[in-house]
Image 1 (cartoon, one colour):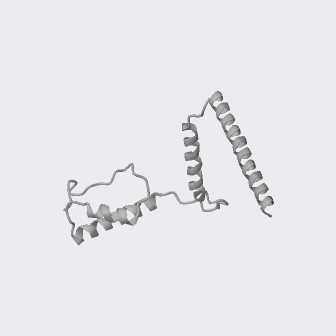
Image 2: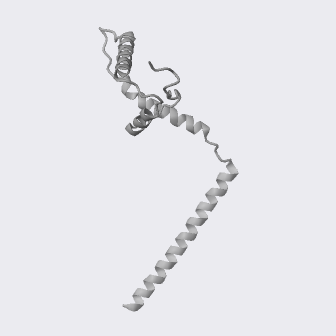
Length: 131
């Protein structure tokens, strides 16, 4: 029989999707190898629990149909909530910092434009002199 000490449990707070390699690595990390009957029993119990959960879910109302499948938009809603949460965490710069950075960007753009324009003019004159 498998005891709690013999099997390392996964942390509950880890919600990322696992790859096949992660699952295989976790399977190799168990302390005691289990025999086929224990695995089959666990599989049976897991399926039984899944059936119980499926029965406990509320069925849709018979006479009324949904025009929009709201389950389909769960990922989009979660994305929106996560994005809004991250935007609230951002530490926005103050007005003076923003003004200074805008001035730096404009100045660098003018300098680069003049520099590239000068190089273009010099090369154009050079090629005109050669032909």
